[in-house]
Amino acid sequence: MKTPALLCLHFQALAEALKINSSVENINLADNKIGAEGAEALAEALKINGPVTNINLTVNKIGDEGAKALAEALKTNASVTDIELAENKIGAEGAKALAEALKTNSSVTSIGLYSNDIGAEGAKALAEALKTNASVTDIELAENKIGAEGAKEESDRQARRTPFETPVRLQALAEALKINTSVTDISLYNNRIGDEGAKALAEALKINASVANINLRENQIGAEGAKALAEALKINTSVTDISLYNNQIGDEGAKALAEAIKINKSITYIDLEKNQIGAEGAKAWCALAEALKINKCVTQINLYKNQIGDEGAKALAEALKINASVANIDLEKNQIGAEGAKALAEAIKINKSITYIDLEKNQIGAEGAKAWCVVGSTECCGDLMEDVMSPTSCDSDKFEVWRCCSFIVHLGLS
Image (cartoon, rainbow, N blue to C red; front, side):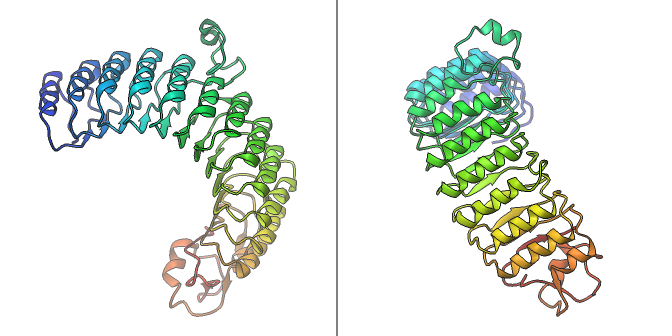
């Protein structure tokens, strides 16, 4: 159910209709300016249990008052499983009310609070709720300014005064994850948790056995935070996907994660895009390559926009000659030249698992591109080549990607 911007009176009429509704399960009122009053009307309808399971109220300026009204409804409602409240100007008070509701509600499995302003206080309240709640599996807290003492017992006054300068600890959330057994997905994207926050989460991941997907994108995590997470991943057996996109883990952090990957048996996807890896030479890439020779679980690895260069590419190529699990690898914008491209091409001749490899925006040139081509028929591969290679990639007008028809689904060399 998607509506244009609603006048408050009209929305109240809709809410009244929902009280007697017997068929509508999904309500999408995103970007409708319903405000707190509209949320209150909807909340009254939700107190009468019906078939509604999914509610999307993204971008509606419901604020704390609207969140409080919905929270009251969730204390009695037993049908709603997914509620999306992103970008609604919800602060700590609204988050606290929702947290109280989650202590008793047993139907909600997913709650989205992306880009609100719940802060440290709101995060702590939700963390307390997760200690007892056994139904929530997915909680989205990205862009909520929870990094500032988000979980440390210090004065709110101090946290407000220096929101991102004080040491960042997600202790409350981390402590909750040590106890909670239902949450499988957690997103802390762009919360500036830093190394201290990463360390707190790492301690939780040593104990937690339910979290499978963790999003730590853009959190100012450096080498020390990465090392702590790496130690946790040596023990943890539930995490399958971890994103450290656009942090600053550097070579030391990458080497620590590489050691963890040698041991870990659960991670299938690791995102290290934009992490300043390779700036101090190829040692970090050699460590990652050695890990991939041993690891049999990782299927996707994102190394976009690091600085691996030819030496790093050669090290990865040697690993790919042995590794049989990696299917998808992104090496775009990595300063790889012709020598690195040649090494990777030779590896792909042997490797039987890679289906997607992206080498776009490197410096492989015509010589490097030739390594990926052989003179032959274009009958089965010509159309594919028009999409994934530039016209100048090979000197010959007849070429095909090595065995592309049998297993390479995407090759980017532009």
